[in-house]
Length: 145
Image (cartoon, rainbow, N blue to C red; front, side, top):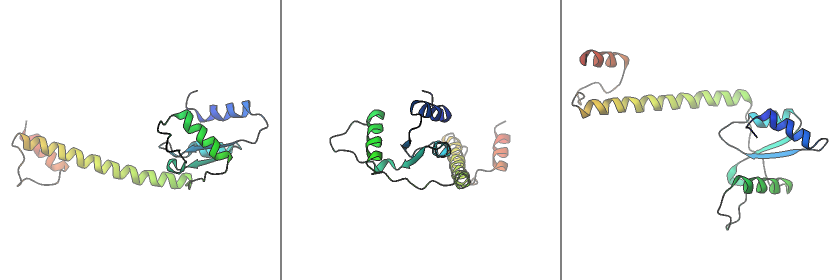
């Protein structure tokens, strides 16, 4: 089955017509869109911290099937607790802050790579400006034409 939230919901409702559905999944990179859609469609859902799922010490191999069985078993036993699910607005605000931090790190990393190459060929010294800026890039472009 493709990773399609709406298709999943339709399939669950088709296979379990009239049933009281409950589901759980591990928190991950994809946010909480699936959780919101499941809840909106009448399927009770919880998102759990992957570290809170009990695993036997002899259970060293991790597979999707084993994880799904553990989640189902622990959900039916009432052992799982939902993590905090931020509103869509909160999630968007967090993403914009996180994306800005990532972009700044990427920019810094790229500036360091440029300086490193310039140093490697003797074009960058300690006396040169420490901050990689637009005027500095234009100066470097003029210097190497």
